[in-house]
Length: 398
Image 1 (cartoon, rainbow, N blue to C red):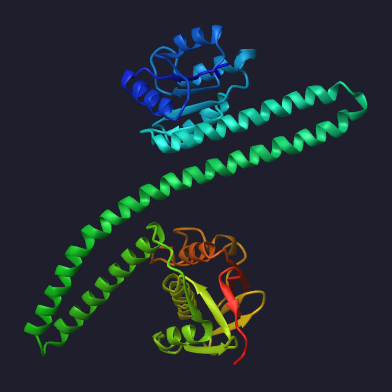
Image 2 (image 1 turned 90 degrees about the vertical axis):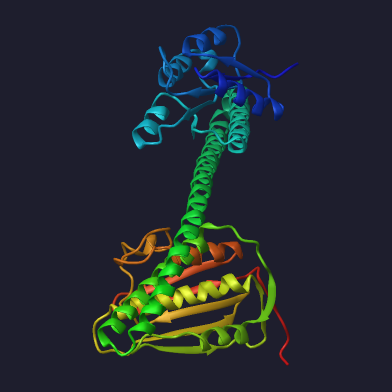
């Protein structure tokens, strides 16, 4: 018996044809409707497995069609995927209020559409199975309560999986778009920045001995360096790079990083490396970025702090079910309302920077199956502990 078809509802015949071709290539049976009325007529004789609906259509728009299908018992639980170029919050809310199961942004990405449809069909199948299980269990009065509890748990789990999958897909779509734009903008900005840097060098050489022009050139050099740093941070976070795993001795590797760190005036960088026989296995270039970002973040926090207490950053290593790196500062601490947001992309309490330093740290640690713990006390300082349990091997003492 052939499975029920997927129904594509769109007033644009080209979009319908492209969508149909993409889905049929992936093995789905597909039918088309040019508007909401034609879709309702189709559903009078056939119940589709899933409906892909365009929002903006003449006569009956996607929201009205969704409501009409939900009023019919045969299509009340059919998954409905809204395809729309309307990405504002009000339109998304209206789609869910009308009864849509999920939405996808136009122009359509065929790979994402395929995965979204497969997931919705799995979720629909699980819902149908749960409904059948409920009816069977209700035949026995003694088992109704236990069956309902089990059903609620399964539905909640499936709903949570759907929410997580939807959030992940949205993040992947946005992340891909941001990465493409970032790479393009970085390429276009670096060329003029290089030209400006060369011009500053020529001006500095031609005006040697002029203090005012020399100071102006210094400011331009610092601005160029800041722009390059912003570009590098954006690329570090948005571009997907190959994971290059290698093995290094933790303390020796970290010591070489700390030896090359330049600290602002008045801030001391200390070390307490207590894992001399631990081998770290991971992408050491990206882990280097983790350490550098944490030290830079701590230094910036202490530059803004008041008081006469010593300003220092201590980097510690140890082994406890895997290597640990702790970066601790004597800065002002992190406010309780700010702490939950510090690893979110683009979040920053400062008036400058991209807000990607700690987000990049979290991203890299996640890639190594690690974890981050932050402990802080206002007026006393902050400690960030990085654990890498699956990226290490412990060797015997020499």
